[in-house]
Amino acid sequence: MLCDMNTIAAVRKKFGLSAWQFALLVGCAAVSFAVCIALLLPVVQNALIMLGELLVQRPLNRPVWSGRFFTWGALGVILHCIIFFMFFFLGRLAKDNADKIVHVFKDNADKLAHVVVAAFSIMCVFVIMFRANWACSDDVQYLSTTAIGKYFSPSSYMGSGRFYPLGHVHYNILLFFFRLLGHESGLPVEAHYAVIAMFCVVTVLCLYIYYSIKLNLFITSGIE
Image 1 (cartoon, rainbow, N blue to C red):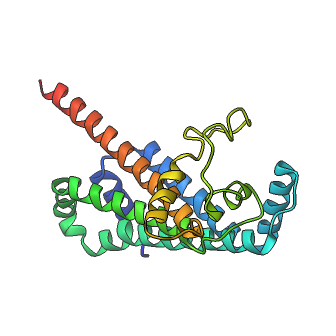
Image 2: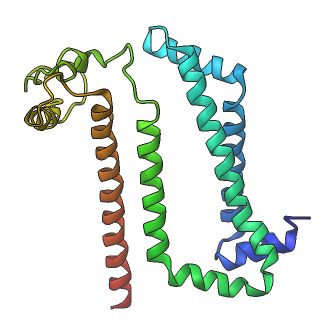
């Protein structure tokens, strides 16, 4: 078998996982894989869209959301297959070199962390920018302002029951530079989505830096 008990025990031992930790990890992976498979099924997609319509009290674009659910499910299945291949198939091929593989991971932990953060950031940007287009929803806020070359008013959305820390005023900066370049027609949809992608990447980087500092302080205090 590709994933026999000896291989599982070796993987669990080399990564320092107890039996219950490994069982919890496998259980979470199985549940998430089942969710990804379910997202590929039209009946599940329709049920989720109906639930969304019930929550937001308005009709949703079914073809668009069905496509999103299918994309998320397919990406999830591919990611699970890659992780399974890395943990079990490569471990089975290199049982005799398991210690060496673990040491490679430990010695290059910082580089691997950078790669993971970069890959996750790229994935976030792709998901945000993929098929970027206006929608019949809150996009009316932009379609009546920056999309047609008008600046946001600082008080436009104060007290509107939404969490807008900057009140969309940050889009005025981008619109200002677009006007300097001679674009008087307003910001394109891609520019609006690029701002959201930038905030997402900055958030990921800030969280990574925060936990890196926290981990280094923990290690330093432990050594002292």
